[in-house]
Length: 68
Image 1 (cartoon, rainbow, N blue to C red):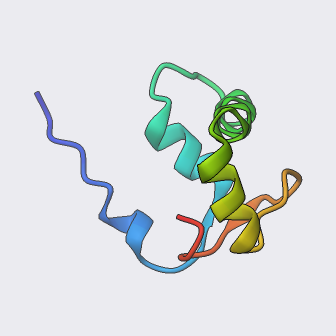
Image 2: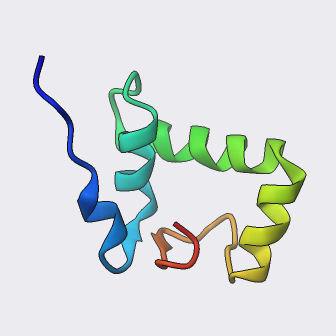
């Protein structure tokens, strides 16, 4: 099995949909992965609060290194 490499996540800002596709590999479409990631973020109050402090807003399409 081919080993997946996600080092690109650690370099600069990334599209939320790209990050979501890396986490939710069963999603076929970037849009559905992004929605799922946003929903999952909001399920965890501590994570959501930390992301809000880092400037995260639900409509954002770009995640900064601090948010990743």
